[in-house]
Every structure is written in C-alpha cells, then in structure tokens.
Amino acid sequence: MDNNPYLIALDLDGTLLKDDKTISPFTKDIIKKAKAAGHHVCIATGRPFRSSSMYYDELELTTPIVNFNGAYVHHPKDNDWGTFHTTLDLHVVKDILEVAEKHQLHNMLAEVIDEVYFHYHDERLLDIFSMGNPTIKIGDLRENLHEDVTSILIHAAEEEVGKIRAYLSNVHAEVVDHRKWAAPWHVIEIIRAGINKAVGLKKIAQYYQIPQERIIAFGDEDNDFEMLEYAGHGVAMGNAIQQLKAVANKETGTNEDDGVAHYLKAVLNL
Image (cartoon, rainbow, N blue to C red):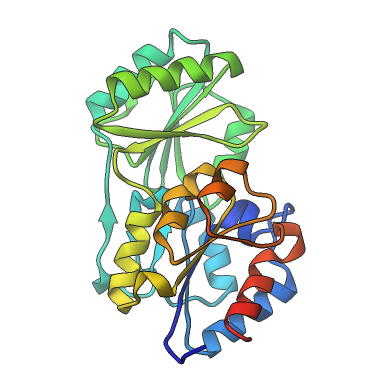
C-alpha cells in the first residue's frame, strides 16, 4: 500500500458496534493503529450526535461526524469547520402526520437536532430516544412544532408501513426520502430528499482531499446504500441485508466477529 491516507467511514449499529452496543477491544485497537498510521476515521450514522458522541470520544476521534443519515454534519472539535443542517419543511411534516393518522399510527416523532417531539406518550420509544438527554416534548405535533425539522419517525402497524411509504413516494418524492428501520421495529424514518450518508461523507472527503478510491465505508442497512456506492471500498458487513451486499463491492465478517477490524487490518496492513 502507498502512504496516501485513507478515509474510513463507520456506521455504528450493526457495523462498528456489537449487538450489545459496545466496541470490541480488538476493533478499537485496529482503529487506533489506523489513526496512528495517518488514516482519517469518521462516524456516519443515522443516530443524532447526542447518542453517538460517546463512541466518538471512546475512539478519540478528531474528525467531522455525519449524523441523522447526512441531515446534520459538523465537527465536534472545530466550530470553524461549519455546520450543515438540512431540514424538512414544517408544512410537509404536518401533511404527513395527517395521512399517517389514517394508517393505524402508533406514534410520530420529530427531531430538531437535540429536541425530540413525541405526538403521543410512548414508554418504549422514550427509552430509546432519551439517550444523551434531549429536550423531550409530548403532545400534538401540529401544536408543538414551530420550525422545520431534522427528521421524522413514524411508528405504525406492520401492515400499514408499506402503504405509508407508498404515499410518501407518490406525494412527497420531491421533498422527502424515507427508509424502514430493521426488524423488530416498524418504523419509517424520513429526511429531506437527496440527503444521505454519502452527501455528508463527500464533505469530509473534500475537506481531507481524499479521492473516492481511498474511501473505505462500512455498513449493514438500507441507509448505507449511497455511502457504500460512493466509496471506493464499499464494504458490507457479514450481517448486512442482502440488498446492501448486492451494491457493495466488498464484504467482511459480521459486527459480532470484528468484521470492520479484520478488513482494515488486511487492506491497510495494520
């Protein structure tokens, strides 16, 4: 391998993180070696920053981070780097709520960076979203939301998810992109159209002047498609969904078997 640095982009859940949401000591060691060898390591996740910052700190990163699948990109250690926040129009959010309510809606959440708005009270979801101490407000989103939002989540009955997604594609394709969470959650995640992890990763790659062929991106779910297609090394985890393995040009072990570390160790000779 030449001495040119690589940019390494890590998805968190199901990729860098084991199923118990920890980073294995072996993976941590290899990432440390990659950084020592001059490579840039960054996180690209659907999570907000508040629930990914602990992993950023644990890996002692000094790079920008992609959150909300690209809707929010910033540099935690450098305020001058810039903040890229791409939002959904409030009137579109309210339109979607009106329709979702007709489809056995369990709940709808809106996030504005670190503020989380719940349409209904919901213990199970509150549990997931309280990580990192966001400001939480519960009540009718039509009354509580007063600004454009970073992302929305719709939790609906399993059989309704397809219908809601069809409506989003038919009516709002110009303005929103939507994806489904992995089982067991029947959750649709919605962000501004044209926004994905690759958009955020491109900003970081340009900043470090790293060409596509020296970008290594790891992922396991459908929110990783664009990022893996964009990266010269688009690496699907062994536990990745089949559709992602089809677009990836590389595959590695599972998140339980240090897939990220084994790939980096081999390709970067660590």
